[in-house]
Image (cartoon, rainbow over all chains, first blue to last red; front, side, top):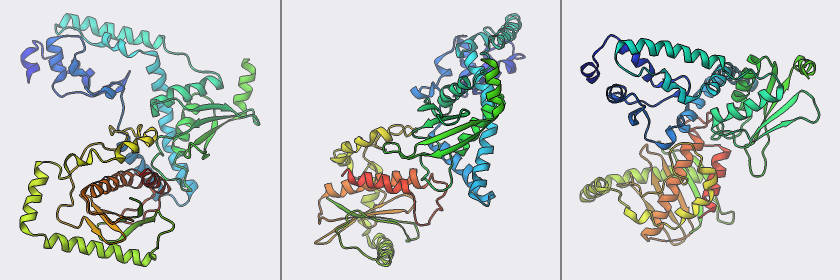
Length: 263
Length: 194
């Protein structure tokens, strides 16, 4: 209501709303207030307090663990109802995670290259039409720059595993993985260790290993980064961490061959 | 106050969880526990019917003006000591405190049975909004209000554990007997901290 009164040119209004849909592709989901965008547009072009959530931990985007636990529970139940055996449940979870992994690789690489602050450039600064055209041209320009400056693809086994252990883990679970170990017995085996897996925190250990969902994510990332491999999860209870899970990444032989050529 | 047994009774009066904490204490058979659960369910229903009208009205007003237990629950001694497990509970992800809650709370059990005292034991009952009942049997015969509020706090924390480790477990069928290792473990920790 207010935007129609204050903004002189209503014809460009829909385009301007595109950056306040609650999702910013450089950061992720964001909290918005229904009236906030028009308010901030009218008063100032700088990001105002209305664009941000007041809760301290909402500044780095998070979702409620309880809500996620229920969603994951439904995922497991669905897989369980559709399957006949334990391995089939795990396969279904694995497949669900795989598609997540394929998308995550691109998304996280992109986000780590485009700094969140740079989205200020994308915002049209003024409501007058001439400046808008100029700024939209500038917007495409800076986005193109961002793509050109993107982080280069990880080409080595250790690099991509560190990306998973660090960037992916902190995106998914809010902290880096607990350890990244190379197997001493087999050349192509690596282990990512998580002492207290977030997703299966509330699930009592049964014969079904629900962490196969995370296995699927890891495998999806590695597969789409051209590291064909096989990932399995093993629960290794320890004294202090009785839910400790080890994700074993077994690369295909051709990855090792490529690695040998490269060095 | 030593907790001897904790029971969970579902909304239809069936016993879904039973655990003894004192190995030395005399045990009931599983059948007797089922009868106890059914009896308690019946007694609660009867008690809510026979509560005098005047009490029902005053209880309603008490619930309106705020928590019935008042600030007494805040000063319950074990609330702080439960913080020793804060390391595992602090990162529960939701906006809950490390100890699930640290404020006084409204008791929904305004008309039914709250506690039973005999010469050897006392039994405390915590009722949730959904009709689930948590029962604790302690080895002390006590009638003081402090013990009752401690027990209500304890059972409410057991309810929080139930919400986390039973309801969020995809392998649990609602209204069925609870067989969750993590719930067992956390409940054991909770009682051991008393």
